[in-house]
Image 1 (cartoon, protein in one colour):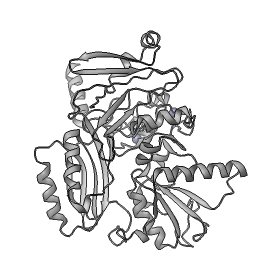
Image 2: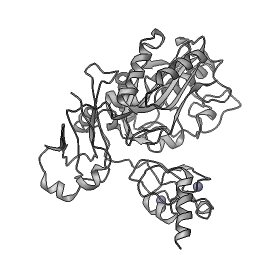
Image 3: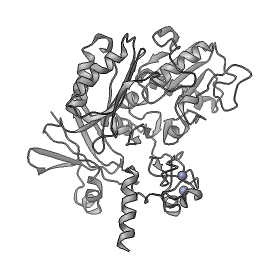
Image 4: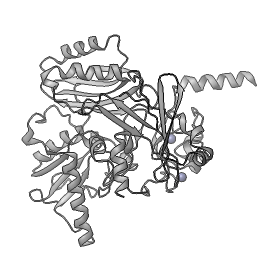
Length: 448
Ligand SMILES: [Zn+2]
Ligand SMILES: [Zn+2]
């Protein structure tokens, strides 16, 4: 069965008091368009915006993939879900994968991929080199998934782990960049010298369920001892601090990193920085449990830690996105930061059923108190960053609604007097290109 999503335009009109009072049962169906049958689910316990399901998920045996969005407006919120039996080939999805594998002639490989993309509507960042491929892109599901299928026919890529999530509003990337890149991820000193193909030099991958057991065991252990005295493991968030700010595994410390390039955990003695969670850790005895969004940063960084003498390294296979898809937000709080125009996804975007299951078992925290406005420190409700309205700053920051208003969408007082400011965006949509606002300004000047 093919299923279609309603989209973000739905909640403003449908999640109203009228809707809440009118429909107190769990679901009902209606037909707003020919060929499409929708079902709205209403819930008094979990807030969400919409549910959608995608057929033909490449990692799934039952070819069924679903999601919904947290509405995040407190108790008694209404959940709206859409379901239809029509074809969703035109629905946009975002696809992420990477694979370390020797590619002898990467330039030729790039040309081959480019020619496959001719006539297909794909946008995103796809990089290839002698060490493999790293891809994040969006497109209508028929084009996006055709590429995955085509790639998997090649035995070098036959076992890639593909992550698919819903695009909110068409493409999540502005254009297609498919090219040779000297480094598949940006890290100080490059990664071409790292033994990425040697599994013994990388961390041991844990499946989502194995990871969950480790998280739960650690939690229990801490509860029993009522402290963090359990020094046998370190939970290492191999992402940036701002990603942690909107969601993380409960026991992970905020990484003091603002760009993966400058990540510096487990430095040798003499160079140790105080904020390093691996400082003074027993390299032979302690288990280091590493996680990142999709797995690539851990796979790369674990080879560095291995070279620095850490013995017991474990990574979350497929990263947080794979975990949320399989286990739901158990031991996880908040949203997942993503590097495309969506900026963040609620756990439910990956798989609806796992969230409902976890929610029933009361394993999902009801609040995300850790998320704070960067300006005033108050709690923020919407776990999504925004860009500074000053185009010449463009800083990604987390901001409460009061501060958005006070600083007119800027990140600081200085930016509020900058010459190239854009209007405040009411929601969390992305800014368009500068000329759109510049032309608006020219027009309004002409009108005066
Ligand atoms: Zn604030
Ligand atoms: Zn700014």
